[in-house]
Image (cartoon, rainbow, N blue to C red; front, side, top):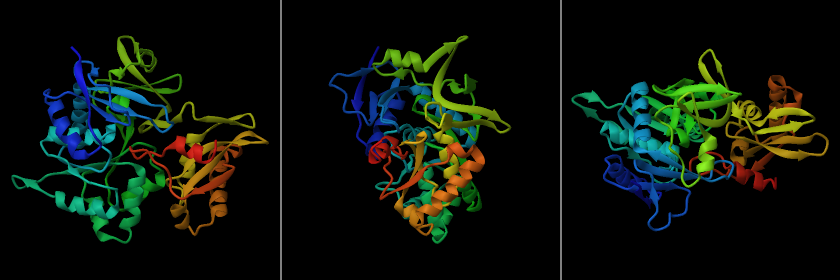
Length: 386
């Protein structure tokens, strides 16, 4: 029997109160994220905990139906992998990463701490300092989940602020997902004593379900025709009101239901390695170039840790790419955009070949981001009139 679907505002406390009832089976399904409010009397399939709508980094909206069982399966598997304790909510709760922080905390019996307002290293350190507690004489482990841009801000601040440095070391694990984590940033985190766990997943998988390349218990991973596909109890029921889209994204093979991620990947010695979006490819001078691979190399350069690489038209080669970087990040390297571009082009040519070299660098006052913390690539392209 369908259940009522009601909108919940973006305030963390509102989501926390509503989700507590929903997980207990006493509340309606929650409409979260970027969607406009559902029509009066709107419903969701029985067992639904939340319908999370996001425009995604490319601007294509999707309303993902997540059941109570899927959310709980994900949170339980996470606890089995990294432990349980008290969580700090530093992400928007209307998106799956923030939502799962609340679910994990509630299931562990510890209401999450909330970092209210805009994210800042100072606020992060202050809230972290207030979270320390013990039960029966034993310290309660602390956890949080961040996006790479937040981690980068914390690492920069930790170089001169001892309180931020202590806060980074206070967590049993810091989950980092939403986009790829540059190698240089991981190395800085390790040097700072932060225990980082790279996560991979999406709203359709109830959040991260592959940790440091290894799937959580119950999650299956396969590469089919170069595409990463995921299975297990964490999968969403599908897309609300879009049966055709659901049938395309979720396929059944040999009795197992798989989610087609649209990501390219491969297995290496340490597990799954995601190499980028299958469709984020340009043809430059007749050569296929993965912009995700280019971006990964670019982000290893100092000052480009949060850069975005986007396609641009090129009169000679047909297509090329541009590096987009916030002016504040550039100023930290001396403000020489030409030097930064030259270094990035050399690194890309060495790793991926000359056809993959970015053609230019563009500085913006501020990098546009989605509420989930990911770069808003659609907005970046509009800024460049692409």
